[in-house]
Image (cartoon, rainbow, N blue to C red; front, side, top):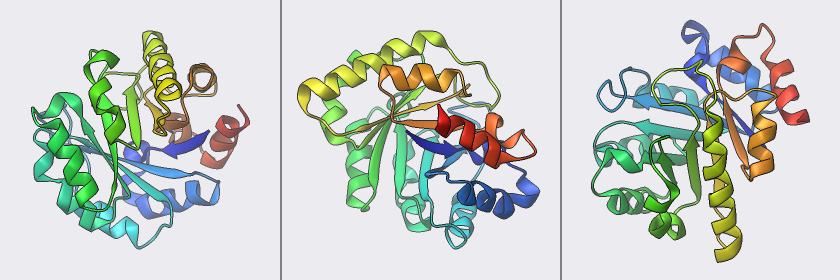
Length: 214
């Protein structure tokens, strides 16, 4: 299972250092949450942060756009150095267009769903993505508790993937620790985002190894 530390919980004053720490600890992806204060009630990183970190890290940059009208930002984040760009089903009435734009920019497309969105709403889009992100908390803030009811969605996505022969990764984000990651893996998840569990510890490497051990 791939581990994607979220820099939302990192020390912003020492962001480059904290990215290097998880890179050296064996992280697979770097999860970068982009929030606009409208789609979610919080603000976070912009293209400049992605651009500057890109020159300091070889990790796969998994950029999660928690913004209204993500179409307006796809090209800019692609140019800044994103490898995967995630857009919320709920954030635009033109989700198919947004996914197409990501591919046209030469990046992998990730479809993201909030806890209130069912898998049934996105089944027609699953053939068009490389990754599906199941939010296991309500998006916007780090440090929330995992929602066990989201396990059913992971299982549904894994079943569809097997039945249809799709190759998309199934990512989970929110309340991930060394207990909840086991539930997600068993249900079929292949990538886990972990923020506070990794960065709220004085030695992030220990936490990453705990997750990988599970």
